[in-house]
Length: 297
Image (cartoon, rainbow, N blue to C red; front, side, top):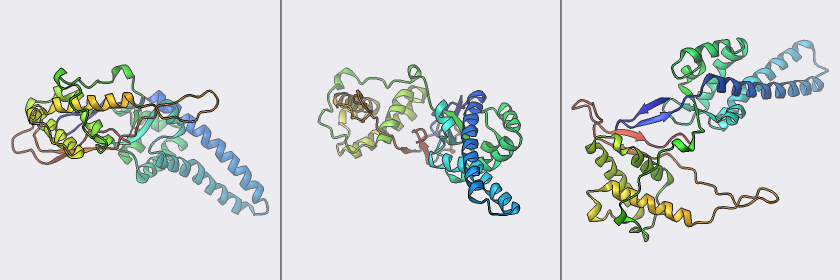
């Protein structure tokens, strides 16, 4: 397991993919790419039968670069790190900071991958992955990326603590429609990890998140809860979950006999700014730090 530690000493867990799953994912991608390459070559040969050998050789090299190198780069860029093989094994390419990859990351990974995967039959990539502590190949090192597991067992997921009994149902009239999904995710992740923080840091983070939620709802934090911002956050999250449980699931057409399917919203990244020092940070080293609670989109 790999961890990114934020300025508040909150560890964001990234689970690097193991070499076997990565190798099988690459194998699926290569098989698909080779099949596409063969089909394109046959079509090009049939369409350019009148050209001389030199022109046909140049065209074949261009098709090779376009399909076997440019194709994976385009797929990885458009899918934000998910290729067909990675999708089959629940993997994804992310940046070192957990964010989604861009074209430049995919370009570097594809360019280096042509050497360490195609030209060396994957030997260099396997050795680099075995040596690396996070299983990164050379393309990941140069691009600043990491292949992680997206599928996490549900039983291991942390559960947000329930609110105090006296706060249950207190915020039924609160308008929660303007609170973004990324802020909800940040609040939930704080609630599941607040006991890992120093009390002063935990209270400060809860106060900032509570102020953000209050600003979105247009209603200030009740005076009796201003000293207990974590309780306010737990009560508001509980109210949102209760409302979601009462809503009917969205219907997604799926053919004959298909029923309604619940489609969860996609959480956008939420960034909270804090200035408290983390445990073990020396005096005078605190500053305005930006921390992203949400995982990559």
